[in-house]
Length: 489
Image (tube, rainbow, N blue to C red; front, side, top):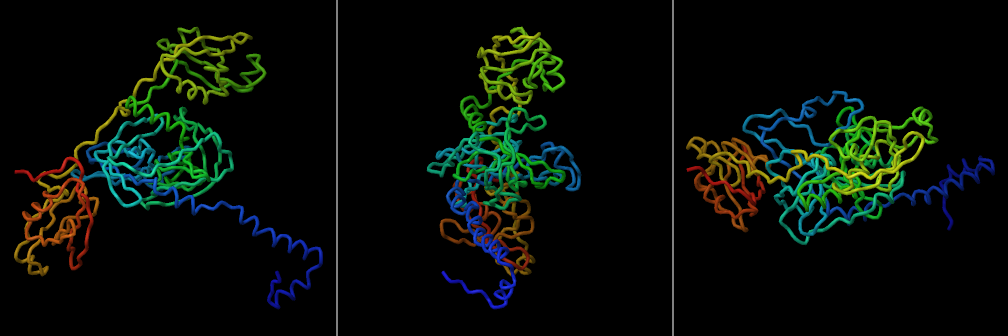
């Protein structure tokens, strides 16, 4: 096909030597082909975005504040990893605190995976689907050690995420995240796998997937997809000196998460194996001094007198080479290998001692359960005493207020909590009308407003017409599905 070039460019080409011109043409022709090799994300996102949910966790300000959240944005935290829960303002007595995160649906009957730290200490959990439906969720179980939580909403026929195999990922593969950073729902970011099997400080039980996908507060618990649209990980942590994204993020492999959620469904907590040894890496110097050719395995530096390893004959100075038939490359890998073995199992452990390789049979013990991992049930909907079912305490307008605002009735908001507070209704606003089942009813008084709201069914959608100053606006809400409050008598 003939292509026309503007005269000024043609003149320039004429001045280029033949070899250089040929090279220029080759480069120009190959660039579009290379560009076409970049991944196409649009179809992947369109197909998989419906399985991603936004999670809002509300808790009373009576709970202790995480010290990390009180640090300023400019506080340096070298060599530290931040989870993505948004920082919260200092608690004010009587007010609520909220954290947002992400999650994804793994069961059409309402099972959702997210991070444990997203729902930590929550009195109420609301899940928002891609079709804008909001549903209350309960915690089936939390596992603090892996940072996995399993939630359940009362729904059926939900879209379900396709799950992949993290072991098929290679360093350099493209991956994509969908979540709600800073509350911006259905935000898509992409990058590559930077490393696999990363061990983080105090996080030796999870072989993290490291990526350069942009992750920020609110992405916690969201899925990491491969180019097939399969979930291969759960975005969990970032490395940051400021709390914001700096090019290094970490995801929990989906196979680890699936094992955790299976146990959470069965037991409400996770059973992990332990044998009671203190271990360290085998350096080149240690390997040479012990007379072994490779610097691999886990050197036992201490043995718990109450553990199962000491009963099997394990001694300080032993080097563990394999456990349960799986080779132990280093001290970081061993806790993962032992942890997945069911407590009570007897497995072979290969050790190096005094110049020879031996095999011991060890009965695997069990990690003590953390109090935070106990199955939980959300506390009743936090509302103010005397509030209606939407969490609003209202009062009648005075005649002077009605004249000033040009109203014949209405209910002035004194205090706001629960779903009303989340909708940003606040003291001083005036509710002038209520819309339910397609019918608009003018609000005559505070008592009339309470009668209207308390007649609504749990889970019902309702819209309030609200006057704030000289402006009026419509605010959509949903009556809490559980623990609907009634006015105090």
